[in-house]
Amino acid sequence: MQRVTCVVAFLALSIVVGPVRAQAVGDPREGLALAQQVCSECHATEKGQVFSPNAQAPTFLRIATTPGMTMAAITVALTTPHAGMPMFRLTTEQRADVVAYILSLR
Image (cartoon, rainbow, N blue to C red; front, side, top):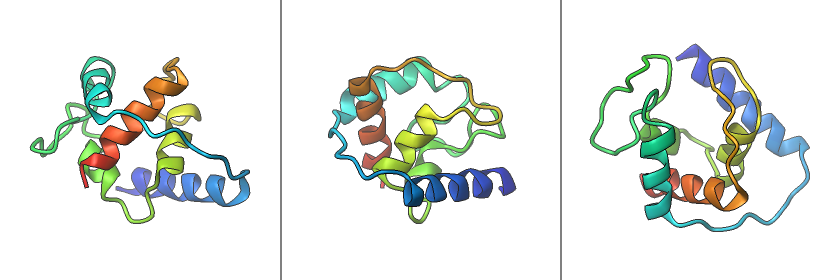
């Protein structure tokens, strides 16, 4: 829980001090497919899943429902190295799709 709080705080600060940019709206269906391929080894990627395979990785539902979590915050999380999260080389479109999927879980 403390790790998630730290990550959320970091993301919030990154957004406040970072430049404002328009974000592409992604396709949640494509985001789910990609999340199942790339993220599901560590994260519970579907709404009905209560626990992630890796206990330290928050579920996508938890990420989506974290207060203040925005498209920009999730995008930063996917593009900024942080403890325990491997860096993936996603295209801008893939990243937008995953973000759209996560936000669709609200």
